[in-house]
Image (cartoon, rainbow, N blue to C red; front, side):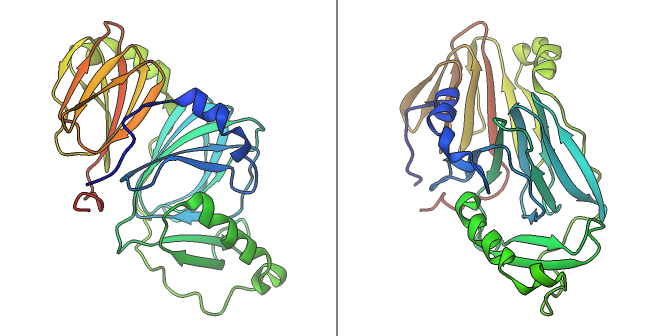
Length: 289
């Protein structure tokens, strides 16, 4: 069974406390990631990168402060996806992407999931901006990209491929099938969506996203039947709520969040509640541990 901390964390206080972690070259720190399926991290700026990351799961980006630019390979071609302050975006699995945050002091929330033992991540660089030829890449099992990416970047800058711009001779076919078919859905203003749909999520839980990640918004006071036996990242955007998990009650205040292993019941306790609840459809590799 997953071990977890039952006390929710204030998101803004946690960001302020960990401000020193958001520095180049990675600018990344996990809030939740140890022995949980749902990895919750924050990434700061300035941070400009040339490498592209490939993983076998979706990623959710919510830009809390400042703007960012997500460079992706859409249908095999380079594309820029600007994600402005307050916008939210879901990146489908297996699409190469390069997050760039040129603004100093910018902060973004990123949600991804624990990898299964059979899954690999890749970090790769291209010869030039056309992204037609791979210059250098490394495949690895990812546990914490914030700590693992730094050494990979260091090795790249020390490599002959970086010095000569001649691709490494042993680069073969990708170890996973790259998505070259999906056209991504553009980012949109999260708060605007909440305002436009307030009547709907006050009447009944409303899905914000329904891909690999199921993100549901809960509103008006009352008892909610959450999907059972699914780990959940819960973020109390406003109001208060109480979650029952394994017979234990956890109280959430505005701005607090937590990852809980399985939600038994979910009670909104404020007429002005708004709760973000994220669950993965994928098997939880910790569910039997």
